[in-house]
Length: 150
Image (cartoon, rainbow, N blue to C red; front, side, top):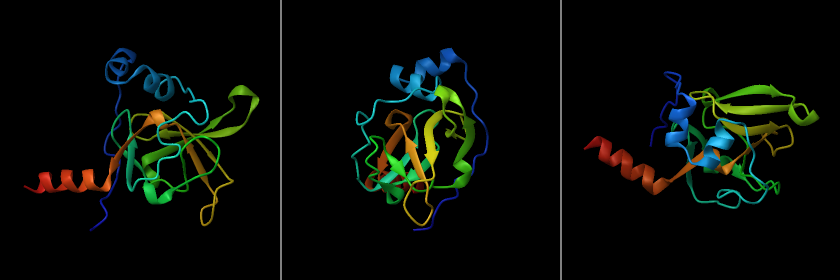
């Protein structure tokens, strides 16, 4: 199977009211208000099914399950995004710390943070809130691709 290009074609802009209509309260708090889930509470922390993770705000593919690992930190952790163009990184100096925030490059939704303590070969740990993600299994993706071809 040939890998699809995951290029960002156009930014998505919505009002707060529009975001509130399409997101759950928790998704809105995290994606739009830069919130964080409590460790160990997210749906995808200890979830290791093969598939892909998409932005809960706009549907952009962000991560593949093959880059997911158990960092023991209480949040889903990935070593690399599906495509570098799917995320943007911003300096975050909130709460008296200096961190690197990770946001969706299409809708600017807050995803989490990236740290330099991940496994080889990247050495990176993308620590992502479950509520900012939507997962599709390999089976779901294949089914959707087959329906698109018909």
